Amino acid sequence: MNKTKKNTILFLLGKLVSLFGTRIYGFAMGLYILKITGSALNFSISILLSTIPALIFGPIGGVIADRVDRKKMVLLADFFSGVIMFIAFGLSQIFGLELWIIYMSTVLLSILNALFATAFDAALPNLVDESSLSKVNSYNQAMNSLTGVLAPIIGGIVYALVPPTMFILFNGISFVLSTFSEYFIDFYWKVEKSVEKIVIKEVDFFANIKEGFAYIKTKSLIFSVISVAVFINFLFTAINVAIPHIVVVQFNMSDEIYGIIESALAIGSLFVSITFANKLGVLKPLKMGLFVIGLGIINILFSVPLIATGLLDINNFVAVYYSILFFLMGCILVLINIPMAVYIQKTTDDEYRGRVMGLNGTLCMAISPLGYLLHGFLLDLIPTYIIMIYAGVGIFLIAIYMIKKMNKIIENDESIVGVKDTLKVAEAES
Image (cartoon, rainbow, N blue to C red; front, side, top):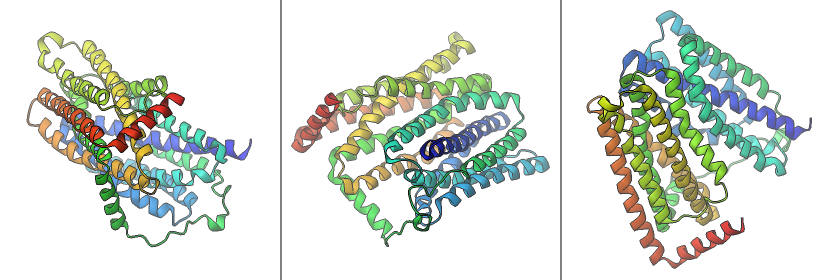
């Protein structure tokens, strides 16, 4: 077996176990919290505790990965993820599986996963031939999508069959096994071990962020695209918090059914990504606006079983109905996200692209904790269907803004029109 193939297999195996373990753990613990508390707020807190550490330690992990031995960073992060699971298991045997144990382990696991992912991704170009780099990245992305499909299903099944404390123990063992496989990856194949550490010049971090913001403001269409993405992410947290509460608490469905319903979103995303891979690269405000309107309508449709309980209080129907809506939502999200991402990538000057993409991701991620807290709090106070309608109407208003604002920008800026024509030509050639 050649070095590229060996490193690729071990890389994907390590990422798969680590990512899969983290996602299934988060899914199963979320179900457990809902079962013992019945509170959407407590559930949203668990999501929040897995989001904030990733938001903070993603950039920090990037700095660390450029200053230390990346292999040691990967191995230690994965190994200590297993240790955290073992400690959580031990504490649960002494005190019972209480919320503070879940919250503590969730935070620590999220931190370690952020460090692990950053170091592994930074080291990837040193693991394989340059000609194989694109293919390996494609495999990596496909694996991320696949775990999005399978984690809810397997998480629901595992939770139904295995006591939560035993699941924590098995998860710890999986992290240790992942560490063992990663030990055999040659992190220094493409570079000398003595120069594995990257020398970084002194950089004013905050000044560079400010410069990135200033650049975005000079690019009106990019600014509008990022603004739309941020507000959609905020409103989308209403769905993330409400659906588990609706399915598990209000309709009292099984954990397996909830897992299947949630996996439909990832299946829809995979379907469109594969089927229309060569037709998603052009940003057209009217078409994009219509897709966003469709997203808003789907949000409103989530409220129908809650309003018409006398007619639709049949769990099998509700499960199929929500699965279809999630599938359609997954399709539409890809139709929105890919053109936005391609536009930003192709129209941002090279020397600013990293900061623009980084700020886009950070802003979208940073708005999520606020959304989780707000919508979790509201769901304990007002009927769930009102939240669904509010989110749908909010997304609809974003679509109206998107169509009007972006069309106006394109009409008034000839350079944007030129870029748009270039993108169309590039798409036609592909």
